[in-house]
Length: 303
Image (cartoon, rainbow, N blue to C red; front, side, top):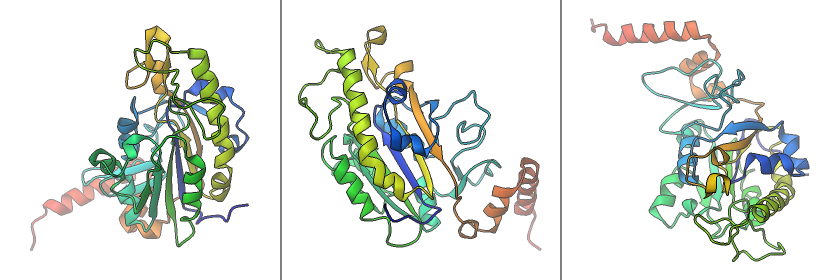
C-alpha cells in the first residue's frame, strides 16, 4: 500500500484520446474505485487545447447535470478568480493567479507533472507553454512509458505539504500501444485519411491499453485515496464515424469523454486569505454584497 499524501492534495489524470464508450466497456477495478463515470464533453478536441483549458479551470462536464463539479457551470473544481469577479459559491478550490497551477502554487502546493503526448515535450516552446508553471515536469519521450511515469510521481509526492500531481497517459492515444503489448507500435489503425484504418482493431487496442493503465495506476490512485482525484480524457477519437478518423475535429465521438471525480478535502482556507475564504463559504447574495462594498470603497476619495 502506498504512503498517503496530504489530504488536500490533487491527482489529475488525463487518459489521452480515450473514448467514453471505450471506458464503459473496459474492466477497470482500480479506476472504478475512484467514483462513478460521467459522460462529459471535453473543452477541446486535441491535446493542447483541452489541457490549456483545463489548466484554466475548464474541466470536462455534463451541461445537463445540476451537480457542481460535474457541471462546471454550476460549480467549478478549480475557479481562478480575477480582479473583476468573485468565485461561485459551489467552487471546490478558489484560486488567485494566472491559471490553476499558479493559483495552487500560491497556496503552497508543489506542482509536479509528467505528460506522454508530444505537446508536453519540455524541449519545445509549445511544450514549455503547457508545463512552465510546474515545479518539476518530465516528458518520457514516447507514448508508452506509464510505469516509469507512475514511479517518477511516487518518488516525488511525499517531500512536504500538499501536492498537485498531473499525469497524462499516452497508451490510450493512437497507435494504442503499451510496453509489452503483442502488437507493434509501428502499425497505427487510426490515421486521418489513412488507407488501412480499422475501427474494430482501434477499439480492441484502446480498451486493452486502458485496462493496462488501470493496473499500472493502482499504487498512485491508492496514494491519493484520502485526497482529491480527477480522472478524465482530454478528447476522444473518431473511428470512421461519418468518414472521420482520429481527433482535432469537432465530432461527437471526439468531444464525448469519461470523467471521474473524488473530491474530499478543499485546500486549506487559511492559505487562501480571509477575503477569499469568506467568499468561498458565502451564498451568492453575499458575494454580490461584498463586490459592491469593495467597488464603493475603491472609488471613495481619500480624506
